Length: 328
Image (cartoon, rainbow, N blue to C red; front, side, top):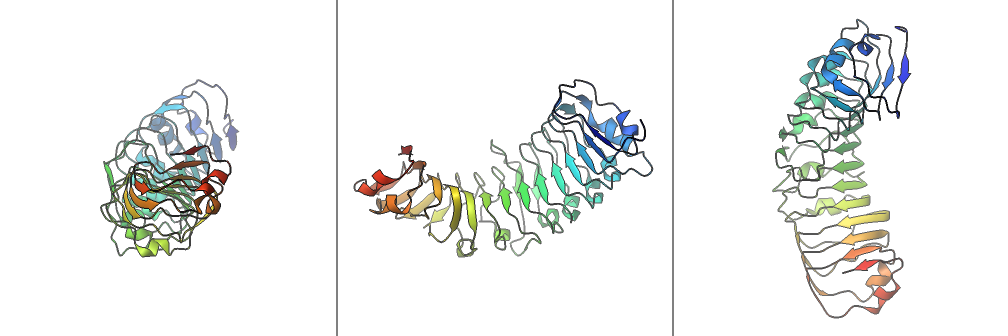
């Protein structure tokens, strides 16, 4: 059995312990134990793997089990690793500094654990990394430009948390331009403010951008509206953003826009017809609803403009908005 190169036990009901014996299979190239009931400590398993003199492991999938423990420094010895998926467990602590040794790593999923330590700046050395998901963890510390410095291949970044996570803050120099072009960014409940993050000004390939509950009390700069984005989700809710909202962004159907609970003002913005869900509640929009609102936005399914300063009457065009379920 020591000659095994590929093992896939995923999506079963295996309830065994993750033992160090598996870590002695030094010829393994891929190991997939995801979606089982496997328990035990990940620390000893990784330590044992790292003892292999010429470890060739490229893919390690242990997601959605009952694993605990800490990620050890020995993780950095798995230098052929390209795909590391550990999400949906009970892992704790910090990401080890040795993560920066995994120069071939393309995908790193650590979401939905109990990681309550810090994210090392050495993560920024992973020039092959494309997809990074560290969401739903109680992280501590500060993210700086050092964490982003050499992530030249990065396309998707998520550090989101449904409950506010004021313990993780971004302090990126406003003159820093990241080397990557993101398509997906979700930093919900990370502290980015009080200024609107200037390091986003070169991100003209974004189609999902979530900065909900990010502690931003600023106006959205003109350069953001001029990025020529084609967006399917724009979520800036629960900040203190102010100013007027132009209609210069383009959207992909069915798009979601959530600007709720801010301090936006001026007339009610009319967005392109591709939007199906629009949430503008709890702002300072004023004046009447535009008479052609329903004609210009015929695909709305969910629509909330409560708690503003709108007046006048509901225009007849709202009655022809196709598929609309809720208008508040």
